[in-house]
Image (cartoon, rainbow, N blue to C red; front, side):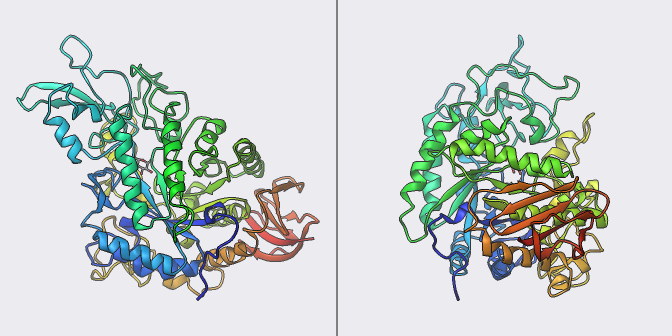
Length: 548
Ligand code: GLC
């Protein structure tokens, strides 16, 4: 069987479609209601047949799961909930056999409070080398009972928690930009940087193809930890990372962080010659401006950065065109390839963002087709190929720390559980083939009772299904993505039309409310996200054409 990633002149990641596997909710091999590593392995042929080039797996390391794996207790092992190191090795080997690349998640900004370093820190006195690995400070106010500064946690509440010292007295405070179980590391301590490089090497030696760098704009905090300017002093939590990145803040995007990525670049480059092929890293950097984000992908730093502007653009041809133009313009000076994404495990699924129902789905499919036209890499989130919408998870079933930290406050954040519901593979009722549990037994987040028609089984071979649409789009994308170069033209068209020209493919998206005349370049229809155009293109639809 030919490898999916045939060797070419361009490194694979420059034009890859990467499928995000949220491990807890992808496939459960043992019936405990939580997805796992053998579950992923068993479904790799599905990903190969879907037509993606790579998978990115969210954290599967030893963790108390307070933030579902983004609280790592041991970076060099697999949590028993998900399997073992041997299971991870088997998954990697099978993926490579099928021609799929594997990107793993790296969490360098913080550890779990159960990490041996943090346990040692709280058992050691203030000022000790153990405490120097984290951000411990004395409290403010006469008794030290106020937090050292006014920083809010992204998940709500203050970013500081006070320790009780081993002798029972109130002690120092530690910084956690996320949950109180996720203490921030002290990146001004060289031991931290060395440890993370060692962890990189541990996974590179096992053969991973790349890393997704969690909170890549975090790590360093401004010297002296000055107060930040709170946007709304009555509400102490930003609504999301998007909002959190809205202004210059002393906890994000500090210049020193780029030294770290230069060092990682060297480490990744060292592994380029091996059998596995070029390695890469993609940054989750919610930095304030396009220029600030571009700094993470300078030629000697990380290879890619998520571009969340496509995801946050409103449903408008002009807005989409602006995002394309601005993205390419910001990356051109550093020579980096763009990335595009509509959904991930932190945001409301795009079908729902676009209004839900039939219209939300139609728009989601259209936006996907436009995204797949663009140069660079596209990141898909598990379940979007099934057209899944956000699930309204009942309060008693919510598990996200941002829900627990805000539910009794003025600014309630219901959390991200609604986009993390285990995906349906087949069958008429929960768990819809997600795992071998008894029919009717719900996985870790309950699945809706109307998902039977959305399962992989139900959509496979079904004409017009979202799954078959994705398969066809990815198959066609392979015919041009690699050879069409790094440019895309924004061509003129009727108002509300987005017309993208890439190589000999033209994508037309109608963001208006009435059928629109097709531009002259749209010659032979290749694929439509909705009804086939017949002289005009229906609203909420996009189509690919061979270019005249
Ligand atoms: C990133 C992850 C998110 C996690 C947070 C803290 O934003 O995508 O899921 O909660 O970092 O690690």
